[in-house]
Image (tube, rainbow, N blue to C red):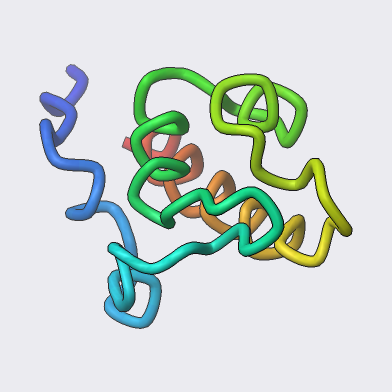
Length: 81
């Protein structure tokens, strides 16, 4: 029996990743962290899919590791239930 998934993606993140949600995670393209979280929650499960939805990681790529970490946290919590 599967547990009902949380409707709030923030419930799936550790406390340290819930900080600065309104600030830009991708500074090159002015993409707020919450926009990236919402894209992942709506099905973007790869860096390429997040890039296509939000334009994050398209500049210098300095935010790629942070985006990857968000994907890992949000997707692993879904599949472990």
